[in-house]
Image 1 (cartoon, rainbow, N blue to C red):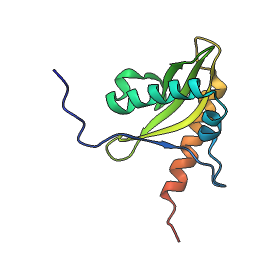
Image 2: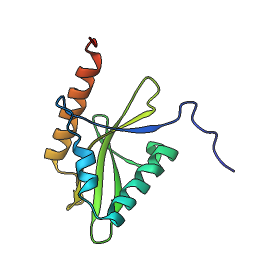
Image 3: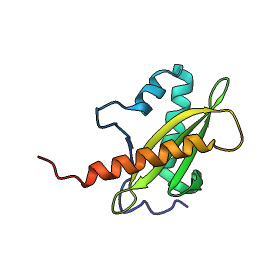
Length: 124
C-alpha cells in the first residue's frame, strides 16, 4: 500500500552564491559517473520520500548519505518554501567521520542564511 503523495511536489534546488557560483554543481561534476549517479539516486529518494529517509543534523539542516564506489558522500540541505517542498542543497563532501564536522554545518548554515537574505530582497 503506497502513501498518499505530498500535496506539493518536492524538488531539489542548489544553493548559488551571489556571484552565481554553484558549489553543489561543482561537487557533483567532480565525482566519477558512478559516484554522481549514487548521489543523485539518494537525492531522488529524499525527493520522493521526504526527510524521513534523511538524517536531521540540527538547526534546520539535514543530510542525505550516499555510498559511492570507494567512499561515502554527504549532501547537507534544508527544506524551504511555504510548504517545505524545496530541498535546498547547501554543501556536498566526502564522508570521512561518523559525525558531520562542525565546519561543514557552519558553512551550510551560512549559505542558508545567505540564500534566505537574498530571497527577501526586492528584485529590480
